[in-house]
Image: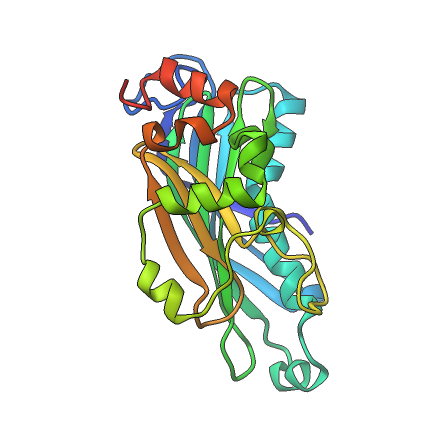
Length: 258
């Protein structure tokens, strides 16, 4: 059952003017907005309650479908995950009730490139905790496709030495990371997949957000401990580690500050 859109919550900025536009450009170009979804998914024992996601309007039908499916994907994943991990005894405890899924959007760039992170929350219908991740997504409104890690980072960065370099240039809660005894970044961390015997694929633990102030690496996973860290660096600081094509677009838009 497709979720019902409750309405536009936040008018976003012009999505056709520049990679990192910071003012409302108006006009007839594509624009990114936040919408809230409220829908029952009885087969999955979940219900969306004001679950925010990004919608890009003003694109042709095919591009709009690809782009908006990419922004919808974190919520769709959450519903699939909730159903796949629901134990028989938990389902019995829920009875006729469903777990509630909510989402909160935080925008990064809003221009030709639209980047946003969706923080997903779940209130389980059973006694327990439902910690879900924050999932960043970036789309290119010119091509109508979501960016992959290869689109964001240079090929050399997606190696063990390259990721070590990236890590050293990021600022963030390193002490907390060390206390959690988390392992160094791996290439696989930047891609979705099935991990640690999970019953379903999960979003990339290390997601990339293109923010106005620079690159953000958002480490976010299921669970409640050591599962949410954000590390940042100005674009100029990681210039040689970014995909040259992407950096060129960021620089041309003024997002790099140069």
